[in-house]
Length: 494
Image (cartoon, rainbow, N blue to C red; front, side, top):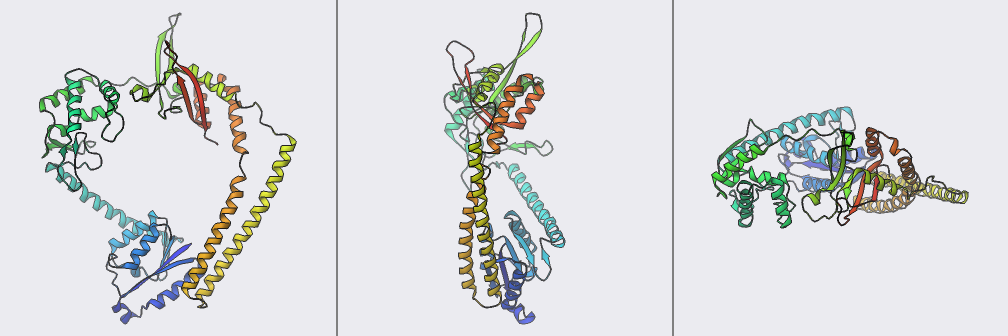
């Protein structure tokens, strides 16, 4: 484990308590050797107080190496060598946790691999959580005060129609977007267009949303219900107890009358979605993708039969086509999809077998692979033994730290080469064996069993074995449905 040894002493402490850097360094080297840890580097702040970390160059270099993934363990003589500030300690523990770096203190027997060490880290975690909650509370109070003063809190997700320069408190009108906002309200209130119709119109004109994506009914509704456009500021819209609106300091884009008329229409047009069919009725839901990359959306149409009964016709259409976003794929029925899926799986043979010659060849290749794995594994063990020997020589004072680092670096290079060679053989062990057999078995089971499965069983089959079904559905002139073809199936187990 790559270990950073951190030492610190102030001039006053060294004079009064004898905390010399050399004494700390030697004890920590010996401890690392006993633990069989590899020393990455020493970080020494000499003659510097522990009241903060901002003025200590060595500890900041160590933090940078931890964040870069070079250090996976930190070892100190005593906890107060690291810092005397609770706030800094909380910060450092967070850095260690976020970067999977262990922390150990020699004198306090603090070792994150022991129960007492983990308990201490949990106690520190309580302080960290308390500190974070205090910060969050101060931020929340600050944002609420800012909103009550008439300034918006939006930073990354600014309201469509407005911009706000970095460092500025006031949002300013984006004239191009503001004109589109006025058009949206006019379409909805004066022309009687639905949210979806407005979204389609904007997509056909290739007008991007604030984040550069396509429009949907939801994004149009978010514009229509945003009080920013009449010069107001809203706060905490998802919490009824804390939500409020107040007059803002920015310029309005539309009139109060137009905005209020839109809110009345939104409430009037709100309707409860019909009860969804049970998931087994839509067993292909979330598995179907168009060539364009978008998901297919399912539709269920209920119609009367000749015997005065009722039946349901399930069909699918690409969401990008619904939103007029440039996809030409036509709708297709569930029956056509199932036929196309059976045809797709027919490319696999009924039984996956290999002849005796092929079996012998594969066995010989496996023997050769096993021999190579054994050879490189032995070389890796020899290098690791050599690394321990170099560490011991350094601890015993037989070689200087610079020589130790140079030898360690060369050993690491050799180990990386051996690991790479070893990976070539270990990664190839399972190639073209279980995965191919599994795919063939899934294909065979689908052809043999699909038609006899219940709807719930079909859903379970897809969930267990299929990750994604990519469908091409070319239009047929004069017909509602297109020519359905499954072009790729991605498996869960492959």
